[in-house]
Amino acid sequence: MTHSISNSSLFLVSEFLSANMGISFPKERWHDLTRGIAAVSLEFNHKDPESFIRWLTSSTLTKDQVGILARHFTVGETYFFRDKNVFNALEMHILPELIQMRRNTGKRLRFWSAGCATGEEPYSLAILLSKMIPDLNDWNVTILATDINPRSLKMASNGVYTKWSFRSTPEWIKKKYFTKTEDGHRKINSLIKNMVKFSNLNLMDDCYPSMINNTNTMDVIFCRNVLMYFPLEYTKKVIRRIYQAQANGGWLVISPGEMPHKFQSRFATIHLCGAILYRKGRSQVPLEKNIKTKQIPLVPEKVLDFQNNLQQQTVFLDQKDTFDKVASQPLEAPRESSKSIGMPGNSHGHCLELFENGYYGEAVESLHGLLSHNQDDTNAMILLARTYANKGNLAKAAKWCERAIQIDKLNPSFHYLLSTIMAEQGRMEDAVDALKRVLYLDYNFVIAYFSLGNINRQLGKLEESKKNFDNATSILSKLQTKEILPESGGITAGRLKEIINSLSSQGGVDD
Image 1 (cartoon, helix red, strand yellow):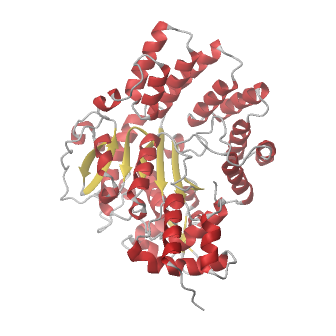
Image 2 (cartoon, one colour):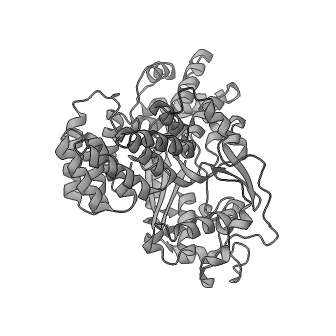
């Protein structure tokens, strides 16, 4: 039996989905919305869609409930190496520059596929990196892949794909990086699979960027064909947070139609290999003068060529492509816009606002100015450490954090920040020691228990990890669900509890 839904109820639920999930259902799509509501209401055990809408729009949803809605209202169509031009740009220009720059400065690279669907995009990136970096085992490479749909994440974590995911993919790639299953599908090999970390994340949440969920200081962020479904006001909100999650000079891969005009001046619009890309906070120098791709050692037999697998060609390169011109927008955030920040230039508040708006260079300059007047200003030191961390300079971040600790040895927040920086540097044992100092100083520091559990989990110490998570859950049970946790980047007690439950119950998908 089909139940009709009033226009007022459709308007109400469309506003709810827009505000909570970023999904836009304008009036011309209300037919699709009606069909979706009819299906999802049954899954929530509501026979009447009208009563379901009243319940839904007056409820605070759990992560699992949001996941159910996502299954019905989001589209996750993707395939391996989708958009050849983007992967040409990565292969020929972006990754060689990053690899060359980081080879002597920590061998650390960070990528985020936001809205990864069933995982083809982040796995494609992992394949490309494994081909381009012969000594990959010596590098600290993060590929974070997030989506709102738990069913898609489960499929991505399993890493098994049908023929539809391989359209335009040459046979030799399938043979090299996948094994056939009994039912004729293909499963990605463990080396590539282990490079990608899948996690549930709703881009409409305010819990990023954050070191807690690893969404900070990203070199390249993919967010393609995600924001096209978002209303403009929520698109702006997501782009603002993505900007804050980028490292200085970081790249954003997004469809040009999804970039609000207001934010284009914050990025450089760069044309490479037929793709339009956006870059944050770098001086305007044509890329072809900075990057020497031949310096990156490539093994000829590992070269990916989508056209005819000729061994002498490089990955996805269209030989007719040349460097396009860098657009006229300045790569650095306009200096005059930072002057609009109203607090005095020598105040902590001014420095904090510069930091929160992504003006890291000016924040560093202002903070050093504060420290020149007061060498023992630990607040300035800690903000300077955070600023350097967001710029990707972890060595300086650790130095300033340690300097603050020398002055105030009993501040658990300082030790916690140092632990997160150490973890980013790959110094896991040092990070564990720092977290133990945090808990010695404050045994109710719940984020420290969570971080310790996460690190022990990565180190394979599952029993210790479980104890850490149990301690965190015990503390969280005494807090209000919507209470924002200190040092969490805006994560609430309820959200962290959901993350821990997900980590405890799901072997393949991390939250």
